[in-house]
Length: 144
Image (cartoon, rainbow, N blue to C red; front, side):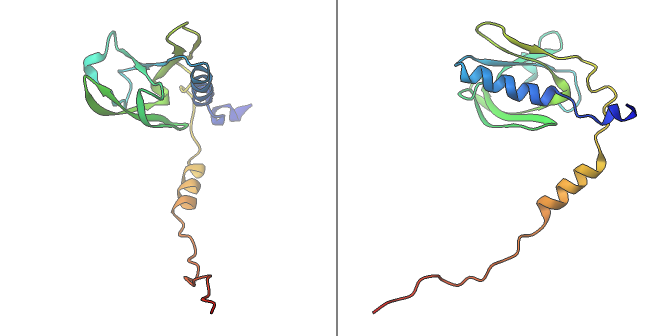
């Protein structure tokens, strides 16, 4: 039980699952974000009470990426395209605009979480390893 802090938080998995469920049912996924959290990149002119609600529907965003540590996409605000960066620690909830069904998260979920440093370095090493080159020989022959 002492390794409880190394268990990954459920938030990124639940956000992805609910996002897919909302989209599959042709509803509009809204993401509530703590605008005061560190490393949040959002349009600050739309922040109210330290929070912002973002429409993250596939039709409203571009280049959406939902990873275990962050959500990143581009969206238009007042006709101007902006890159949005939301760490998962700043996500307060995800819900459908039309019926408010979704989930809000425990703000203390990441309080004692310590990501394993080894897994991060291992992942970087695997992605940066060069692929072996194959011989550039054409596989076709000219027949007469």
